[in-house]
Amino acid sequence: MTIMIPAWVDGALTPVEKLEAHQRGLKHKAVSVFVVRGTEVLLQQRAMGKYHTPGLWANTCCTHPEWDEAPSVCAARRLNEELGVTGVPLEHRHHLEYRADVGDGLIEHEVVEVYLGHARGDLRVAPNPDEVMAYEWVDYHDLMAMVARHPDRFTPWLRIYLAEHADTIFGADLVQAARV
Figure 1: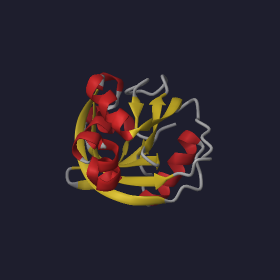
Figure 2: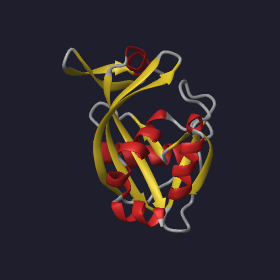
Figure 3: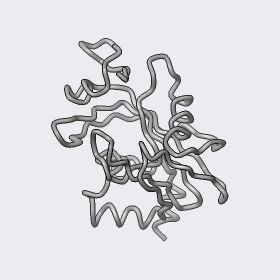
């Protein structure tokens, strides 16, 4: 199945096959979601069948919206498709752009809408094994320390989000509380 994503080609937003967008390093639309529970962040370990960054730990979920899909709809859809999570209200937290080498000659050059959801303690998580091989709730402070010690275990975009955008994504209160 060919997946087309919205990418900029010669200055115009155009449907482009997903793998081609990554091979050419084209700037394209994306959505990322972080779900938190208190000071814990829900992480996923990408399935080994993923064509880039397999086995690496990432934020709760991320994807590319369909051509006419609203980012908020895309975020909720993908949260369900990857982790079986529904019913978590998502708040738009940030609009950012990054470019990162994801290995094997592939480049992520994304214009990302980032969403944050606050989960209750009884959140049901049912990962799709084609997408996610494991998940874990990690305290924000511990996550920052883990990424500092072993950056190669985490996706490039998660490292960028934490290093450059944590206050905006999580809010200064969570970041400060995690530092105490």
